Image (cartoon, rainbow, N blue to C red; front, side):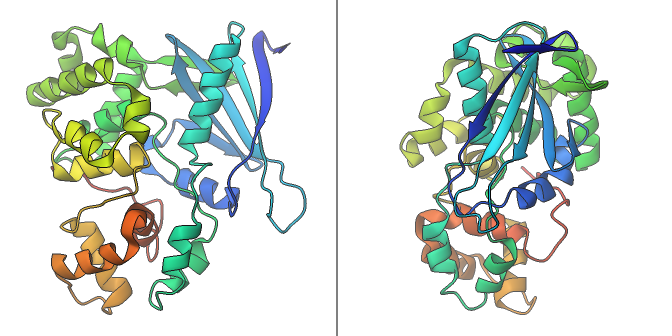
Length: 319
């Protein structure tokens, strides 16, 4: 560990599962509205902050892959903090970055199906090597799912950033301030009235408190790898989380790609563009497509959402 500009830093490397194209990861994150203003991009390096044990830690991630064939991709990272990180804290953040960037995702089963799908094969060719960047934590995406219900995403983002500034953490690196979403324990200590002054919606405060209670009690490793139907039922059981938000949390927060919803309006539109020349298709027809992709439905959905539009366009939440 070294000390730079009064911050302690430690470095390491990560090995993504090939195929992996970090430039496509950055391309997605650069324009992803719900996390806008929370990270910086320079010289193909992502810089972002995370809250760990009540304090902010900044991480920088860049590509150090040797050669041009991408057969063995490599990423390097640097963690910076006001206080030295323990080995356990270092390992926890490295795991979080690994999970956040979906570096372990095996795209080959999805590609095998998609490349044999004449209408979808061009989508895979265009996005080849893109691993889904998740929200940094499933707790953050669950809170975002509540904040974004039935209001424009930009308004929801303003509320989210107000929460981050009021209740989260921050760290200055290279003369830039990086703010991080609060941990469960931090928001659990906030009185409902104080939360309401930021959220300005009593029902959403109630729903946020249900999310806080859920994540205070659940084991994230169970959410990541437990039986899908059991995990999905637990997520759907959170007060205020509807069917759409549950799928959103499962796919975009937990990387659970096994199932997506066939009544998702955005997916129906994407499927109509890909398979039916823009003419509407029914949920039953979309379900037929999803069934073809088996347990890689979430991969199909992520690629389909990014097939014909600017990937910076955030998803609306309609629950």
